[in-house]
Length: 249
Image (cartoon, rainbow, N blue to C red; front, side, top):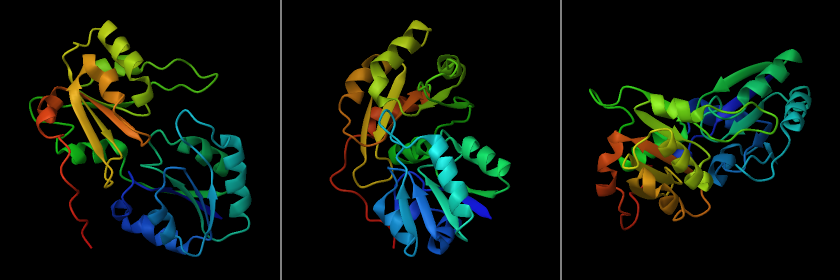
């Protein structure tokens, strides 16, 4: 019995790994996040699809229920897939599913995916690192689950040259205030990328002091905040182009 924890990537179906596509094509049942693109689910053409929620700040399926569904399915089906947006091992609560399945003597295989930070970096054509200028990157989120210990995301953000802030656009004003209060200069360059890798991608750039104003321009798509001196050139490259490049076939 094996459950495959598969990364669906940032959205574009052609950014799936070959291994992910192969396993999806063999799947008997797929438990998927809300943000997984329909085109990705179509690859699992023979599988039963089960939506298990997972939108930041909204109602989602309880994790303990997802865990039980995965275990029950593993005892009935040959190929069970838990399909997560981005990479399963980054802000995907994969450890809870892995621990539960292993405690129930069910094997787990993780198939990595492209995470939102690298997709957003690619979208604006600015590297998260730069020789001589940015040697460290922090992936953080200000979100804390009910009953969990407080997060020291601010400390991590201050310590890194470049910061990718997940699940944060809705809290942009609080984030900017917290970082500035902790000593981050208000003029620190920032960029926000919404729907990275998709034809509907939108990009905004400015300074930390303007973060709330920039975030207010986003729509309902998943958005990532990028922060650091490497994004000082972002304002020159984020102007929306007329149409998107054609995807390779």
